[in-house]
Image (cartoon, rainbow, N blue to C red):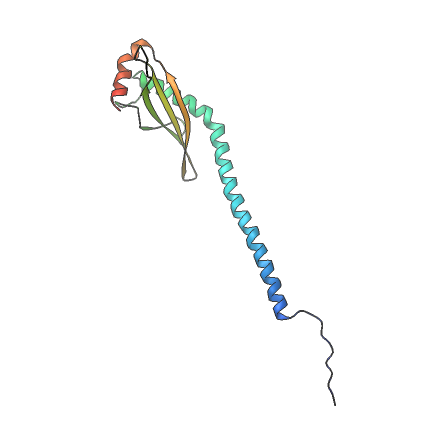
Length: 151
């Protein structure tokens, strides 16, 4: 007596494992895309925050620098190379570098390089605002020379 088995339909174990591996590789790719998109979104949010606040920060930096040069602010003996908090904006600070303008006949002018330091979610980024020429009033000569010598 011969026993005949009816042909059974379905997948073998190897076919199921191969399909799961293909699915796993696809899911790893999708999760990698999610991780990179979250990182890019975080950076874009930070840049937008800095861009929205930058004009206010720069005006506060300019006012603070003016007070320090005129001797009214809570300044130290030198400005160059130090990092100062931006008044009224705790997430930002700035660092300046003062250099005399070459071939300046009056000797009063200097270049002021301003770097804005933004703290966002525990990270710190530096935005270089470039050099700005500054020629103060004649009555500030002594203060300017003292600031430049302190470097």
